[in-house]
Image (tube, rainbow, N blue to C red):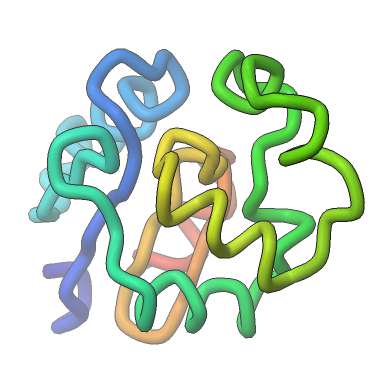
Length: 119
């Protein structure tokens, strides 16, 4: 916990940026729980909360190999509902890392943002 807040980092073990974020947290003694999208998936309610807070356009990783491998029909005419469905089916489509610390949500890894959120 950081300042009494539960800290959870969402990502996949093989993601370099997730690894950098975890090393940053470890180096500062921040206790956190790691949630691997590939192993643990993500539930609809949590994903919908992230979409509401951050927007599906920011969450959907269109530059991922998973997205590029999707059939064209799946990538065309994206709406929030379609994007949420794709991310539920393929959690590696969610940008990473995603850090939850109390009420704060940080997408990607920027040391200064982590420092500001975690104190």
